[in-house]
Image (cartoon, rainbow, N blue to C red; front, side, top):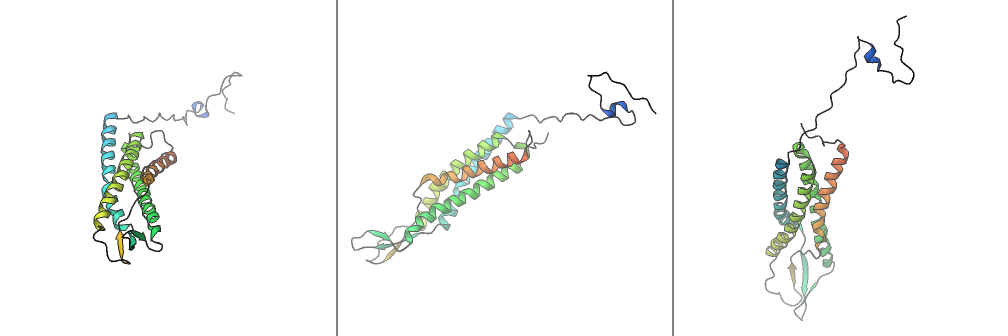
Length: 201
């Protein structure tokens, strides 16, 4: 029977691989963390902020095309009142704006996450800030485009109907896109679990 090394009581025993020359234990080298390039990340973040903010213009145009107008009846006094069930379109316009913002925030967050080299807090802050400004631009440009699609024009005779442009009676809709971007990107970070978020070295 081969002799076994004897260790003093109280001393930690060496791993088996160290006592067997035929099967040496391989000690892996610690993985080098990629260096954070601050200047490049900041330039990237500024570009993301500008691009995401400018996306508000096509988003506003899309909303103005999809949002339903409100049919208004002309009273003898010359005032306008919404026809039956047409007043619900005010909620429809706001809900549609919020849904488009949620979809845009999700797309922005996933697209940024796929850029592995620039993952990190700079990308998150740029996405959220750009989404907030983009949502505000979407609201302003959407109302502008909707006003041109449904101009007021002259009032028809009493009892006639006119189409009122879609409206956004609440500013809370601008929060949908930045909140969606922050939630989706944060979820991807938590799901990844790596200290370097998988950035290449």
